[in-house]
Structure formats: structure tokens, C-alpha cells
Image (cartoon, rainbow, N blue to C red; front, side):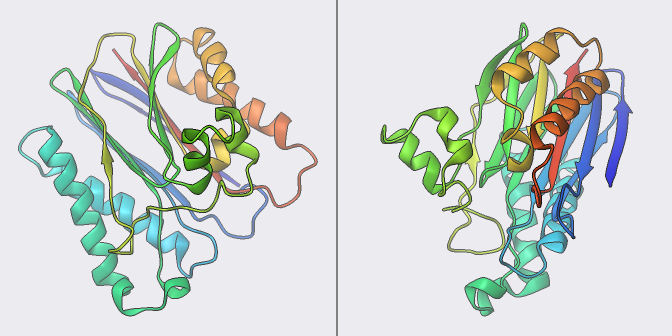
Length: 254
């Protein structure tokens, strides 16, 4: 089961997919809000092995969007405040600090805010945000996982993160005060023609960076770009049982 949606404002175009994959429950959640000159995007992946992952991801994403859309301006401070609001809402709703670790609903978070010619990116966990310019990847967020630490230490190559047994072992997440440590990228000066991709690990595990770039170069809209990548994902997961939920948001800057 898939959920597709498409948005369009004067400044941005976007498309979204959120799919259950081969699982019985979809713990991914993706959403966005766009106005004439601002765009806000949130994608969260509830952690497996914890109760309420689907509710955690939805709560975090919607709380972030609520806070950022009410902010007076698009800024680093507004994004940080919105992420903190999402975290506090999770703790208040589920009582995460009072529950044993495996009972505490937790989620990753990938957040993007666009406005006034700038992009602000925040992530927690292993859901990613890619910035594309000229059809090439210009920036990608860091994963907060044991596998990524192995990559940083030189033990494995970047592509090996996808198949590492430690890929799902996260060192940062939302819903737990001890592991809540969001990472904020330096603000990006956006240009017409820039593109962004937010995606969960269930997506980027099967759609590699060269596929992201080649499909972008062949696409005139974010919907077409996303559709091409979803077809690659389907081809690469064919015959795989119990493949993970996957979600992605594509955004074009006009």
C-alpha cells in the first residue's frame, strides 16, 4: 500500500511517497506544508523493536510542522525550536523518560525548511536529506548509526553502510532524552533548479546515489523523479520478503 501526494507553490514543487513495503505495519510518516514562498518538510521512521513506532513518527513529523509553520521567519533558530517542540511533544505524549528503553516509542527525523532563499536541514538517526545541484549530490546528512561510525573510522566503505549488520543500530533518536541530539547543517543558499530528497533507510538502502542523480537528470518534475526512483526500488526489492517500509519526499526549487 502506498500513499502518494503532490504539492506545488509559487516557489516549490514537491512529491511524496510513503509505502508499507513488505511489513504488516507502516512506521514511516512523511508530510509537508507549502505556502507561496515557504516550504516545510518532515519525514520520520519509527524505530522497530519499540512500541508505537507509527504513532511516534507521526507525532514527531506533525509536531515539527506545526511549530515551524507558526514561526515568524524561516531560520536556524526556528528549525531548532521546531525539532525541540517535536521532541518534547513525544516525551509528554508517551512518557518516554519514564519507560524502559524497549517500551519507549522512538523515531528518526529528517526535516527541511525552505524560505527567503535559504534551506535549513536537521536530522536525527538514519533518515537522510540530500541536496542536489546541477543534477549532482551537493550535500547529504550524516547517519547517526553504528554503521556510519564504522564508515567514519575507515572500517567500511560508504556503500557498505547499506548492508552492514550495524546499519539499524542508532546512536541518536527522538523520543528519548538521552539519545536526542539533532544535527543541524549549515544554511544552504538555494538557487532555481536545486532539488532536495528526504528519505528513510528503507528507501536509500535500495536506491543508491548514482540512481538518485541519473533519475533526477531525466526528470522535469519532482513527481517524475520520485516515480523513477520508486521503480528502481521495486526492481531492487523484487523477491525480498519483509522489506522495510520506505518513504521519500522530492522537492524542486523554482
